[in-house]
Image (cartoon, rainbow, N blue to C red; front, side, top):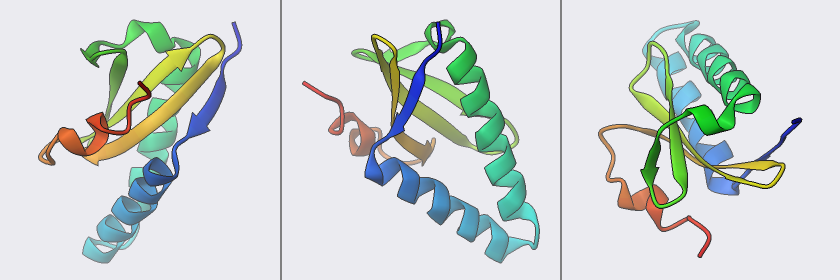
Length: 100
């Protein structure tokens, strides 16, 4: 099955903010973060149901090299990315974004 990939506005902002933060730490690290996110999203899109459910219907894919997770839900042929956040952040930040 071919899945559509959709992002909640907050998720896109989190990717941009994290990339900028890493780039400010070390030149090129922001790009490395973006490439790692892209690789994780590719895996999610290929096999979205293979990742662990972590809360209700939400699943999580781990971003390699970085302490971040991609939290998403799958509904029919659409994958909706709810959040891309650091594992040290409070999970309630993304859990409240889940559809009811």
